[in-house]
Image (tube, rainbow, N blue to C red; front, side, top):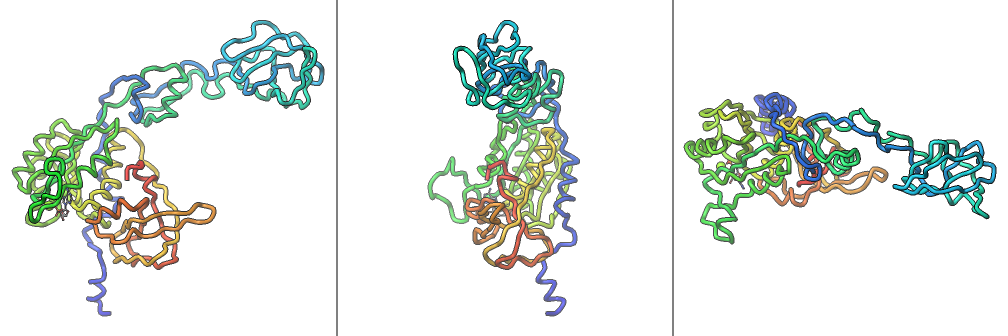
Length: 422
Ligand code: AMP
Ligand code: MG
């Protein structure tokens, strides 16, 4: 092979940024807007807390029993104990516990101050009003201390926490019915391309020659939409500088504007020019596949702007690796650790060196027996079915020339990166 041949067999572009370099530049421009609102806890699923919340009360608020059984003084546990009453959940025992006595107690009920241990009822015998402990628990057993979940005055939830079921339950368990959250981010999603048709307005197989249905708005909106991120479908935009500029003008209320298509160097690629006309532009090649061209910047409205590549798989992968972290940053959330696993690939994977590559795969197996991964087949960036079939991305390093069947590859499960959206 001559050096010239070798050059042909590389996909490297010296002007391309690494993914980390691109992400660093993006995150530097993505600051969280500071608008907040106070809403009902029961309506706050997936919203982002905007302030630290401190516990007003201790949970549990009293010493409570972890078992159905009997509360007693441990030092007297070898003796017969007179059962003098009961403490049921919500109905505490009122009174003192004289020596050699005990009370019946249920799970979650208040343990009297002068009892120190609860024995589970399965380890006892009751006869003629007396309790006999067959198996003495250790001192203090089955008694939940005050504040053993969370003590009054301590930090319950920090600002910048996504509120999910456990967090909402935590707030509810401390008596909060309101929570202060960040206002939802507003995102406009625009598809560009004269070839694009909208299945909503032109359903059925009625395409004109050269036309295709728009996939990217459905893809991107559904990857991003959540209670904390309100996406607006801003339609399809023609391939002209005027049309794209006019579309940008419609997005003044958005925190983030995303287009797809029109970011290469083709005759109909006007997104970069439109951005240069209205805002600040950075157009990069990123040493990744799919998704080499990416336009990023700010519109004159102040909105953060992403011009994603047009091919749906490229749009999806760049959305996962760049738009989602940008949105996290704009919500005051920390970066998400990327969890990867090592898996054995079951067939040869082809690749040219020069770009990190994310091929779509199907991951199976488990940590004990090992993970296996197989390809979804054709990996071209227009092949949306490769995303549909996949549950993971197979990450092939920049310099690799693919992977041989039976070798170990690094895999990113979609569940670790995509919030179960893809
Ligand atoms: P472009 O980046 O505009 O050159 O587009 C690259 C490829 O992606 C072309 O084959 C386009 O037809 C296709 N494409 C662009 N936008 C979309 C879209 N919204 N849905 C499906 N395919 C698209
Ligand atoms: Mg186009």
